[in-house]
Amino acid sequence: MANLLKVQDLQAAYGHAQALFGVSFEINQGEAITLLGRNGMGRSTTIKCLFGLLPVMAGSVSFCGREINRLPSHSIARLGLGLVPEGRQVFPNLTVEENLVATARAPGAGNRNARPWTLKRVYEFFPRLQERRDNLGSQLSGGEQQMLAIGRALMTNPQLLVLDEATEGLAPIIRTEIWTALKELKQEGLSQIIIDKNVRALAGFTDRHYVLEKGRVVWQGDSAALQSEPGIIEQYLGV
Image 1 (cartoon, helix red, strand yellow):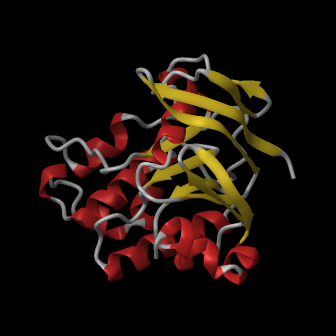
Image 2: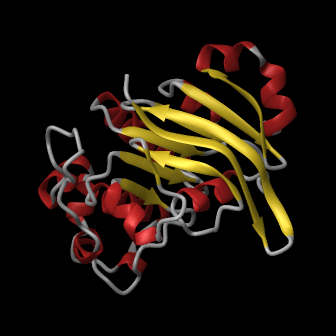
């Protein structure tokens, strides 16, 4: 299985306050992994470093064997990383369809997806978006906005989909819909990095988990290992 993304000894700071202290993890083609931990422990900071939204002090981020941590964020996105940001951040004054096509991109040369993501395919994947295609982003419910944020990221035809707080603030029934969608994407071979607090739902389809505490990876293992160590969940996740 080919290595897709490798993060080694990542360090980062906000001004003089260091936030990451040597974070390391990797993901192979077709895998789904999670970054777990309480709020403020470095998960979202790590994602910002992956996308060039926060400078890296030390360490490296490699994608498809190429070091990317010195590239601008728009160049990183064009390499095949798709982001579903925390808070969804859909364009409120654009329609659903305008949101989807605003940042659409054809598959890159290295993209292994057999079926490219088009507007038609996103509508098939999330029928509710087709129903609301002429509604503004601001007129959608939280769940619909999250579907739109995922659909918008898929329209960039990424090799790696990164979701920051995938189901935060959503009703249980909508969470289930999102988990089902992510599981289908995993089955199709789309690699994913997922940040979320719903550990048990994640463990059902993800390959490995990395637990962050105060900017460090303090535990890593597969779903079986995570479920066999309930103390890990209690100690570091507080759930």
